[in-house]
Picture 1 (cartoon, helix red, strand yellow):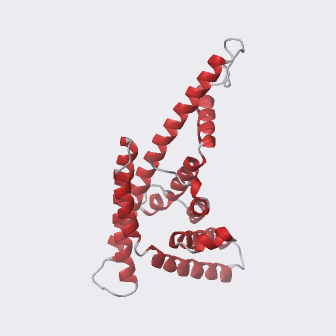
Picture 2 (picture 1 turned 135 degrees about the horizontal axis):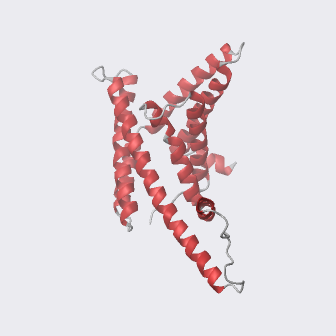
Picture 3 (picture 1 turned 180 degrees about the horizontal axis):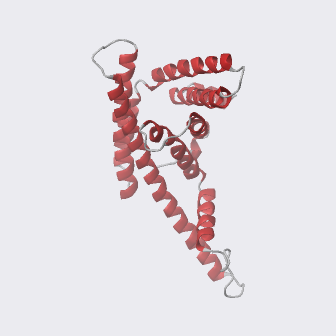
Length: 246
């Protein structure tokens, strides 16, 4: 209960809850649309999804300030590759939130001189760039973790009293299996990196679909958004599972 209260007291937490609801509605709508006699339920889900999407825009107001602060913090990161990826990613996130705010202003009727389609495309494109750069950072961190795991395993094998040729991954296992095992062990050792990678991979399905780069059906987008939202909620409830910058 305390975790739930802490979650709902944060605007980011409320946004994640609303986002999870929005994509759950999208997924359920996809699953029910092809079934006879479910038209009324589908209509209600569509209305709820639209209402939740509108509510989320209120929570995102002011996020541009947080994105600017994140950009300033990422400049201080010691490692060059994460510093470059995070800084560029956060700059794209700043532009995304600016576009999102303009779209909100348009939606509430405060201005009429805004072309919704153009600003929506800009927002989607910069969100896509943000996710690509975030995934590049995740990939770099994964490679570092794999290097550490491989080095630790080599040390254990070197100090082991087992006969030469003994290995956790035997010689008859092909390279791909060895790579996947090393990847699994690396992500198992670093849960925050696993959560961040899963979240970004699921999130990128949305701009890929909207930009026409890789078209997905409503169910795939809804499932991806739901998984991403749950991953985001976990990092808010358990801050120790949020990927840290160094």
